[in-house]
Amino acid sequence: LQTAIPAQILPKLVIPSETHSLLQSPQTTLLISISGGKDSDAMSYILLALREQYCWQCAVKLLHCDMGRMEWHSTPAYVEDFAHQVDLPLTVVRHEAGDLLAAIRQRMRERPDVPPFPSAKARYCTSTFKRQTTDRAIRQMTNTGGNVVVAMGLRAEESRSRAQKETWTSRDSVCAPTKGRWVWDWLPIHALTVADVWATIQANGNTFHEAYSHGNQRLSCALCVLGSLNDLLNGALHNPEIYLELCRIELESGYSFQTNRWLCSLRPELLSEKERQRFAELQNRPKQVKSLPQEASKPIQLKLF
Ligand code: SF4
Image 1: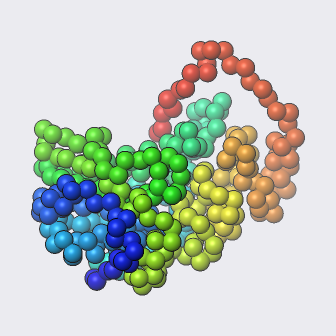
Image 2: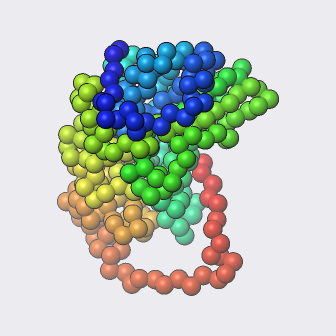
Image 3: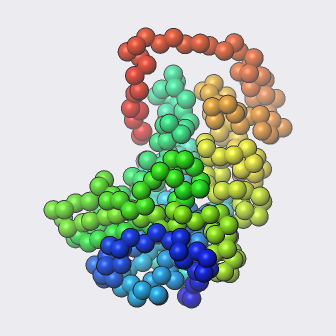
């Protein structure tokens, strides 16, 4: 497949010098992490064009971490179609013990004293369902050693924490020197703007996930704990089963999905009369000011599954 990089984007790409020597080796696998979103789509086109340009001899594979029921209903088919389109093998990985919705329910059962939903501070969704599952896939594909470069489509413009990320780091969680396995994380499009990303997609056939046609700013889980109001409303409209399941967890746990936003307030017409009553009770309950003893206020590492 012939892919193209718009000329204005080339100088912004992050290509550390060691990348070339690693990717020129047939002992290396370039693992492109794709979510179905615009950033990883654009990154894939760019990396394929760079492979042609620099004659990289490494194996190139796509990896998708499937979040189960939390995904947009169309994401699994979209990532498969994308793999066909760019003619690359696709590995889909899932957490062996269940999906993110199952983990949220489990947290609710085991720790009713803390919010069951992930948050910016307790982002167990990405660490468990993306990081750990990717590490497992890397171990499986490099049983007998080898180099792996994991390319991810994170961009500095997206958030302050992403802006501070290093663009080339050793992925120590899965390196195994005794087995001859060396792994790096690479953020090749870290400096690209959202306009650069769309320009790359337009230069390569202008296909993208349906969520953007519905007005989404980002593609993530159908309803993301860090999502904007716009994307939550879209997610609820087009994925009502997931929306209702998350509303029920709000009502059962008494905690809102985001710190200051109840999903139940977005599309209350989808709730039953009984659920609306429960939501009204939760909203009317007096705010509790907890003064925790010193000991109890220490952060607690919560177990999943
Ligand atoms: S999209 Fe949002 S909810 Fe889903 S894994 Fe990422 S941060 Fe967590």
